[in-house]
Length: 137
Image (cartoon, rainbow, N blue to C red; front, top):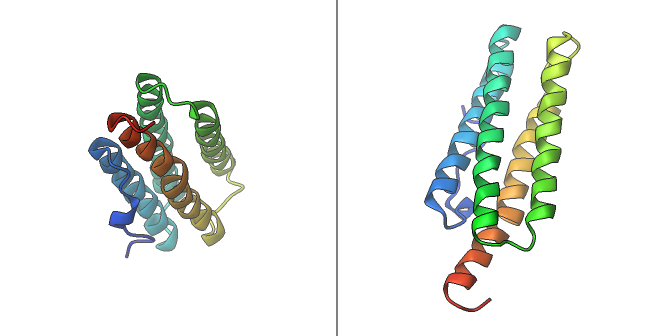
């Protein structure tokens, strides 16, 4: 069962970014399922690595869009990305040391951060681009 489901309210207006967000949510759900079903630490570690890699890929794509659209809030948006990447790397490190079992609290953090970021900063960027394209900026 999914930890959280895609909701059309999460759409920001860029199909590719929305599709990438769906993949991120899917990976978080895979991680939740692995944790919930008590799968081997190696499986959890592989899924966490997948989340880390895909997050970096996705955030790099967003960074390119910020430059392409001369987004004035790019620096603060990128700080949010860096915070999340650092948290995921911390989880990877703790998992590799065997000193962490992914808790529901950790899974809730991944879910809550993702939703808050999409509905906040990412939506704001989508609106910025939409206004700019309409000549209303």
